[in-house]
Length: 122
Image (tube, rainbow, N blue to C red; front, side):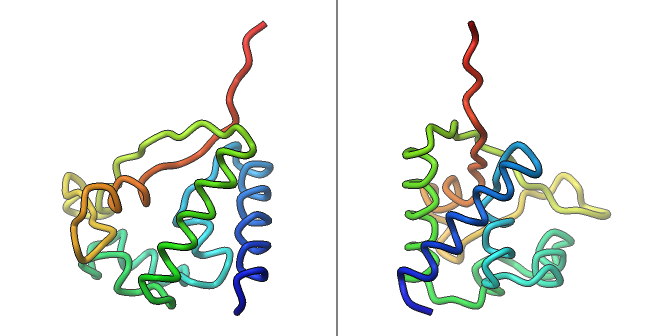
């Protein structure tokens, strides 16, 4: 998949998620563009996978590019970032989930940041 195609898929996924749910999460975009399967996402949420990047069907360079494009789309469309804490589903609900092998704080924060339209008060 070339850069132009993936950019279009990312933009469309973000637009559709905002329209449908009122916000967009990186994990939803990854599923919508075919980089992450619903089964792999659920396995990660239930703690069967140690970090999300392990089950993504793209290398780290591509994943980094996807995240960068999401932030660019959010900035261009005046979407407000909102950090969300991801906890495991099931028995160990207090266990925080990891997104990256590196455990890098910036990368973890990037994956956990949702975007929503800014509310303009009159």
